[in-house]
Length: 134
Image (cartoon, rainbow, N blue to C red):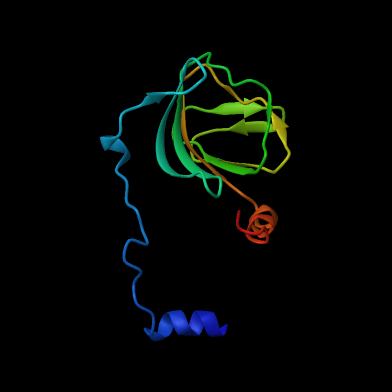
């Protein structure tokens, strides 16, 4: 086992106060997005590093324009389904849109709800951390 893993198991580490943020999505109101028929609940956001976790709810017929993913985006469908040129993502299915991927997701006839997690890739984090402070 690695030394880091052994240290984690040894009990020599202490919890980091404020290191976890718990959110109850049921307590958050649905907010309109910039796209008609698509609502969201922002569960986590850190604009400084470009990370965001959002719960999306698409009404039947809602459309997200064709777009390019600047970073990796991961989705897990809770209800309904969506599809794009690569396949269909149904309830319980996961989709990862890789960096620089171009896509136009479309919900099926039923409403669709899924959490979407967008975060910088390791290479973009490395680039950001190597930049001198402004």
